[in-house]
Image (cartoon, rainbow, N blue to C red; front, side, top):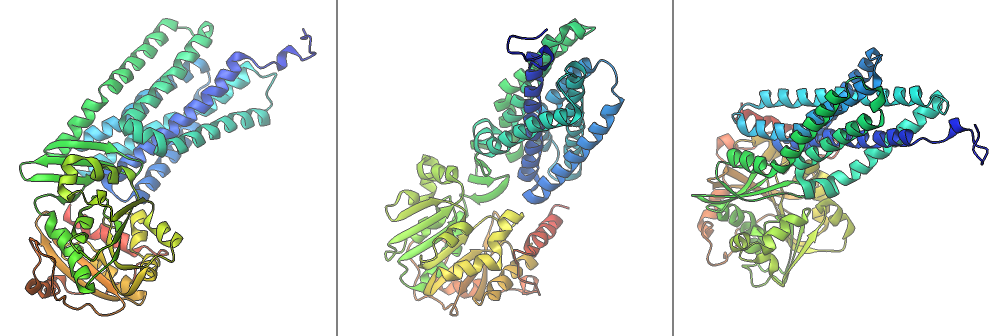
Length: 523
């Protein structure tokens, strides 16, 4: 029969067809979320985001290939098999971030291998199930709408919706999902979407299902489990982090860039970024006094100071001790970090409200890009206070390319100072930074200080002229003294210089060296 428009009935777009194609969009989005969540969790908990994301994505794609190959053995009851697979994907993928988080908190700190096995096993299982989905959808479309689809049209339609779903999630994951839902609830939410696809298939094709009641019960059970887990996700996160950190967690937030946790115990307040300790309030003054004052006091009367990193405002607090300082520019990537340390009463008490000073300008931007985009800005002193180079994203901030940019922004007679990890535990890493500074034509003046929470910690002053002992230090310091400065420059044999090549964007040798040296501590 023909419609009044003359269009054959067989060519009409059916509601079930639209929903099937829409389900491709949804399952592609869900599959990518599980992949990204596993990679993000691995980088949070194991470090080296590039390595973790690469291995997780590789494992996931390989597993999808296995799933696609296995789909050839599914020959009967395609709708029922598709429904079961959707429920399994929703359950396994939705619960995977929560399960990994709980496992990391429950396993002993040194049990990295069991956690990796669990993580890659989960990624492999979910990837295999996801790999089954698209081939089944394509066969269902071909089976039910064969009059509308040739092979090329079928593949084009399905893959278009598949890639669109992946695109939407790729943008939404870092900008919306993780900051507002967190990793655990994001996984559970998309698990519920997979279950919704299964429920839709149940209703749309109910006449073709032999055991409608059993399938309906399975859908209801999976939805109930995921919904209950979603409701309890905050409790799970609280339990896991309290267990991991071992003391009361005051602040726990996932920004677009990192997991921010602030704890308080008998000894004081601690800040962790992605599980790595950044400071302990009982001895952070040792670190920040050592970081700031040897360079700024030697400069004499700094007026314009640049801080790269240091979003906690502690380095800025020390810089503001100098009456000569007229302007401080703080460039930190994470706006949530600087917001917390600008407004939270507990945290502003630690940095003395430094980020609210009228002398301070806070810029939330990538430090590398900011230096490139402001070539005419010159500073009397530059304080580089980044986390350790435990991944390639951070490693670029320890390269010759980056230090060449720092040199361009350093006024004549100015000094830059760089936090440079432990010269005792990561000896070659420390001297790699020194070699990198020297490779761009700057003089490197290394020194170290003992910070009980970290042990021996290292710093390097980079300048065009040799560093000299300052005539005075600001009053009120709790750690540094003029007479003690020369002792900081002395390196005993177990921290003495070793041969190291410069860290360049093209090789990133520092990241590999750092991982090897710090990895030995946990063996």
